[in-house]
Image (tube, rainbow, N blue to C red):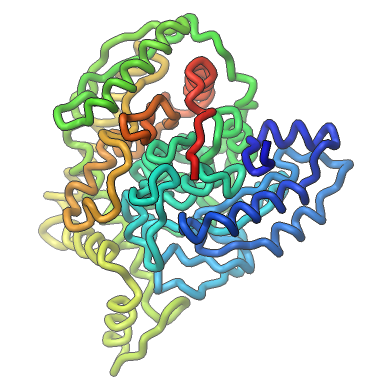
Length: 480
């Protein structure tokens, strides 16, 4: 078996038996990057020297949780001394003077940084076509999108150009690309993982999480990155369990809710068939399947795009050509602001800033932003009511498999609807995971989404792991 194909569990097992060294594993992964990334185009920055230095600092006497594991980081998280671009021209040459909490924890756990991955600019998109630099390709079919905004992170895991990766999820940006690329993507409860050092898109929605080859690998990474942080006022200071301890093949006694609102007209029939087959398999494993209602689901996309664009409008105001990043000088200060933003921001970022600024403007705040926040509360209450009778909710991750690159580029509304099944989770602040549950007739992966109650990561990981092991889809890899 080629070393780059190893999971975290497999690699750590071989390292502990002295049958593998971190250096050998890194060499295999970087050879894979050299061979494939000219086609997949998933890395913005490759950090071979940094990874080698990190591997050299590892001590055989201190076997850390991610000892020597090659991992990629989405390029909207700050790593001290490493270029962090958010895939935007406005930050093309920005080098952070500080470390994000998540990457700091990964360093302490012994990971080796393979590089920074491509994304939709400032995480605004569902296909990674909105990157300011280039479009990432799906390893299952290079003519198709890998999803977004964490498309680069999902693609490098699917193509074995790292062992695991970190993404961020504002409205589905970990789960939807995980579905498109046939890997595991976990969006934790809002506040479980610190956002310090994550470049903000929509602060009340953003959450960092792992993208891995297996559910157990996701649990291992979550063990490392979860926990309160005094530098993030929204982080939750709670006891963090060992998430790997919850993994089991026995789902007896677990109640799985199936919301009728998530099986809608327009959803790809092959996706629905695969997801319903997965639900039947979960039922065979001992879980009780219960039909539930989430009545305000229909309003989630509209509420999300008001809230997310409003927060983006506020967060992106800092990019003015004065403090850091690109500066395009104008005839006066206002002209400098305008020239810098005109040349630094891409079309989708400008669109969302304009939408958000309009929604927050005088006379429209109550009609749009306030109303969207009220709808958000109703969506959260729907989930609260559902979790009084079920432990986990099962839905499709995406209404379709990976679409062709360029297919939705000229229709922003259709692109926004790619996240229709994932957005509600962010509005409610609850955890969800996407796992492979089959393939369509064209050989493209289908994703199953499992949603949990607040801080219910252990339950969704348990259900996901049991299904994954029974179904075996995780063993199928792209032939690239």
